[in-house]
Image 1 (cartoon, rainbow, N blue to C red):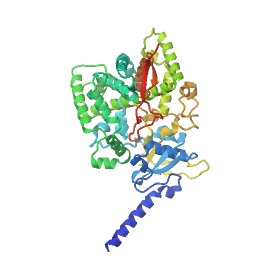
Image 2 (cartoon, rainbow, N blue to C red):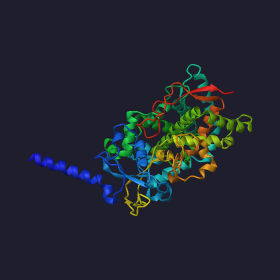
Image 3 (tube, helix red, strand yellow):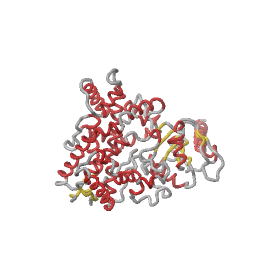
Image 4 (spheres, rainbow, N blue to C red):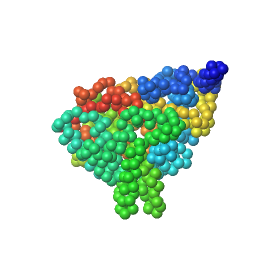
Length: 499
């Protein structure tokens, strides 16, 4: 009798999975990769064979005529990968009300710090949190930070000059992270992170704890992206407990100081906003959460942009020379001194930065959730059937795949800043470049990232020629266990005196 019950149970499970995996066939015989039970189309990600960005890129390339592709997530949940740029625009901009939630879930009771980040929020909470941060990261607030960022860039220069006397080989991500963490600490909190002088500096440790590729960060990322229910059940926060504790202590001290002293930094702007100019008590979770947002917006993505830009300039010395020629020409107008207005004249440097983001975008995908039933266009050009995706369906915008599509960017593996000069940018679709996202959920820290990156790169290149170190492994590969782009074996550079 037991054997019969067991057989029936196995049969029921098999029939259930067969039914779940037939979703796209049942709704319209939709084309897509063949899924597996439980893991859907993401088994290679969970086994560490591929990054999830690579899996979505394969889907993108496997159906070149499709507007979108049906696939299955973990637990065989149906989802789509968007290929057509008009549909990308629908998701990110035109029909934002139907796709206004990021598919990156944290539970506020488990992870209050990440829950305060606009990236993880939806609905009215998202509007409130984003509005709070948008008022802080404006150009008018960023512009006055120029002298402090320039001072930190000069410290960066002195650090490289002193260090290369003993060891000429620099890992780009490491040194650029030292620079950006010092900038965030100084500009946002008014403190010295000591990254250039203290190898055990706490601010750096806390920042690296969130982003350095480890098995712990891989687990936290996978749970938030693909198994948020399990993350809640296991009570696994994205922000480690010791990082949260340190940030809470730092923010409490900062809040206490601001009650008696006004400082001209971004934390002061946040404090004034949250406290209604000191008339109400600041919500600690919001203050600490926004402080972590400062870190995510200003530290990791900017250091990644800087390190990959230096790599591309080292590999392409002719382009490096053109960037420096433009820089020197602009500096002549100000007697050799970099100024805030002169940053906006570095047009070719900015083009090189955007081309770097095309080739090395910080995120491989923009994960969205359908929040209101939406009728998709026909999957193929000669198709007539239309499919409605239901609220709760995951929608993946494959940023890396779009940026490397030869139909959009001819010779996509060639580093060519000309693509992002104004006259050439106008010829492409609005959503052909997604380095900062697009639409209402566009990157909050975009202006600040460009600001600090330009200052740091201009200061370095005016003094040093950057070349590849003999320690550099080619081809350059990325780590497969992180959400944000990370080099697998580092980016190794040398800095030579420039005449």
